[in-house]
Image (cartoon, rainbow, N blue to C red; front, side, top):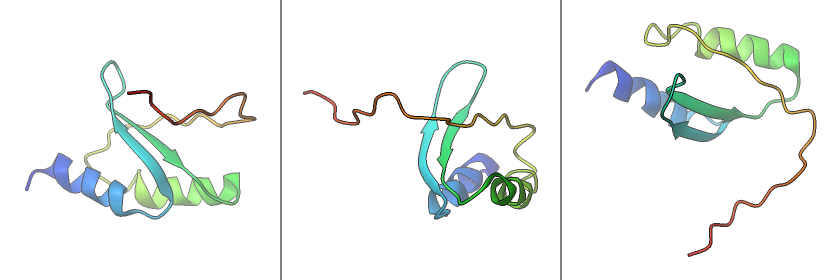
Length: 75
């Protein structure tokens, strides 16, 4: 099993990761993580992301408010 497969399997199994996407462009993956506080996230990111040697860097974006959420896809 490759290191990338192990890393993505770990993210998929993590209960705080609510959505995970493999995307194109300068970013390889987008994770939607849910937790109780920014302090909690900092600890989680340190333990989960920074401890994974396959992750060279990560960027964090915070959601201040949701303006629209429409997860349904028309077929």
